[in-house]
Length: 252
Image (cartoon, rainbow, N blue to C red):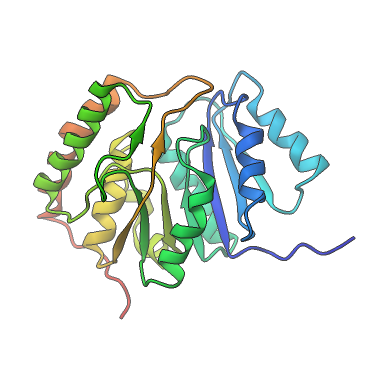
């Protein structure tokens, strides 16, 4: 049997009821020229999402596909924190966040990777708003809400990032090792803001890479009004608490 070389990069994909998408998204990542590993974090999907992943592990991708199963819906933020800690423990140098529903195009993963490996970024963000508004098939109301949410976050936090709420990202390992992951509190939409804000406060360089975001075609969105509420008020708390907190700094 041919030995599979360990990748330097892992793509973390949280799932909840993604049976329509999970196999296709895994295969799309593994079809890329660069060898990315995949970590699925499934929150007890009753539709059998984890079973599909286990079948793919057993039949084809034993070395490159990994699965962590959690009991119940524990939130996007805690899923990623769990994944970050797993990735650090397993020695990956580049750690990605990506949705399971193809709203993030797997073909953009190499561009985010290049931003960190070649262009000097510590965090590469797949940005919907760095070159206009690049969102496809969203209702206009949601486009407007998302766009102005990012504007609001920029105003409150002072971050020079066009897409502050983006969830398609690549981190260099050092970023996740420096940030105190146990002090990242938000679980929903605001988690993405808190991670970027904390990375900036720790002295890391964030680069935005333009992408086209496409609304899911299969499955059901997990977005809710409560998630936006957490982000709106959470950003204010994040900004105020930063005045009284000392952040660990990037090594020179």
